[in-house]
Length: 526
Image (cartoon, rainbow, N blue to C red; front, side, top):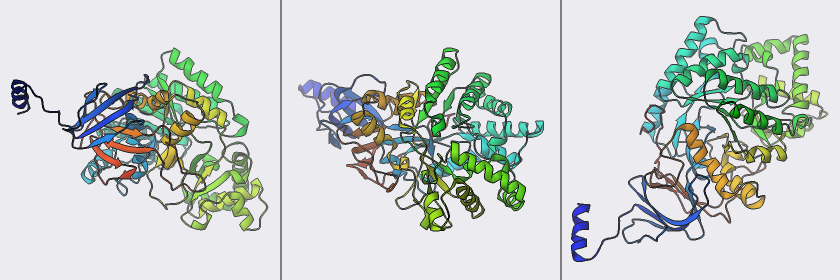
């Protein structure tokens, strides 16, 4: 029909304007490749980018026109480290969308849904606000086969774990993730991880690693990740790369040199990072790993033994002094405490003072033990250095990733990265501090992670690409979430288009669930 219409128009000496679902006019296009921006109109039809024109396109045939003079059009951001755990409860994924995220990779740090195929089917049936992809988690697999036992697997157990990784890959996982600082992954050795990573590699997957240590053990842990990549012949992402604890500040110069050396030797290793000087994870990270073997029941038994309790306290004090404690109870801020919400947002120092106790590291160790016995808690640890953050961010292989969990306003006292990662880079580190150019930053949020995942139809603004698009104001974009008041959406992310549908319109969520469930085997599945 369109051909007939065009022929008639030519015979009559007139042409009808092209029809578009969305036409973005007069913007600066930063296409995700790292190339300089240029002024162009961008047209979307049937979920695809159909025109990128430096010549203005007529608006008459467009169902929706976005006047974007002075604004930037970029590919939708791809979050390579997203805790999508609440997805079936929060399928709209507004906390991600409002940041400009159109695709999130879940299942990080060794923890993933399983069996993955059934989970992906459920998500697809429900409908999701962003595109979602998943890794298969080493901790999840190990727990299913061995529980939380602190030992090597038997040959039969290793075979079962390999089979479960293969099942996850067949279900559509993009690779294997590990959380080697967490239970039970901390009980594995390098050989075990290599054996499982080889299974993911055989299916074309990648390997993402929460390192075994990011403080005093940082250097050897980076070396281990590189060694796993070499032996398993698998592309590696050292995820949320950072340097924990004042004793180690500045060590990123060495870890980045290690990455460069590995890449020069042919090992495919890259990084991702969130742009903050604080981490967040469970408070059990402060406890010696051996003390948690067998679960909470065994931990309770150990702390009843005076000798073991003393050893556990000594280990916690060491971590409070040199690792995530930063040597000061005021650096450990409680984020989610289901058994006492009044502690959320307070520090271990605050808790000690509430109890009338001296704010010593020994007191902090006792409070950590109490928190675990009462059901656990998550905490924010203010233990990173701005110099390391900026050095890692500048590295050419570093991608931006949130390490954020899907969230609704009012849920706990989370890390502000859950709301503000991508706008923070664009506002603080591009516009205010000049650590990156706008083109570099957007490349780290789009083209680089798309290439790592093998998403050939996303991550760029180009004709024929899937229409995952962000329209932002480079003069105003910024994060608003803070450690004191984290439940705040960012500014300056004005429009977000997911698979050709407006999901954020004028900084407001439209209610559209246009996301797709991405499976490695078929790339796209709805």
